[in-house]
Length: 256
Image: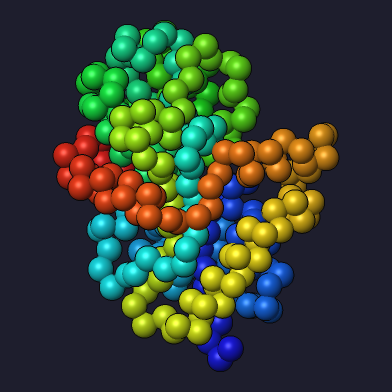
């Protein structure tokens, strides 16, 4: 392949099958930039990448960009790693701290606050996660990604945003989708599709070669990737994205 594309993707557990596929299938040879979701968006918007696994909330803001591939980071039930945690029931929450790594989840949280929880909290930016242990009792915390595992069991009320969304809409959700700039060749997109397919078909191998083997030999990571994450961008997830995007201009807070 004459032109080696630069790809930015999420640096969380939920992406390791994709990364494994990119590194092992067809000698794709792409340059990879791994970062939290908000930084992935920044890498793409500022021109450091040609292809991106992009937070879904960012996509409608972009021009000269197409959604590509049949894959995403999605969930049809509990996603586990996109949650609001609190010490009191969500109806009593006065303030919500928003994970600085998030784009899509911030807007999804706003959607649920308005349409399901019926609250109008004060929204606060959270980059220092020690606030979870020191904030007032009526504060809640939007946490995403691998860090959620560290907080499981520490707060009594946990609201899985994929579950909450489904209860309102009866739809699954896609948190991140693959996009490319217009002009990226069909050959590159086809090679990406093949690589992602390879990765999704080799989830255990991806875990085995990752830092997520842990003390349980990768069982927890594998269970999460096969039970909580759904990688297929199907018609139902497209419907969910359209509903989410149509509501986006009316959602507060806006994603960072």
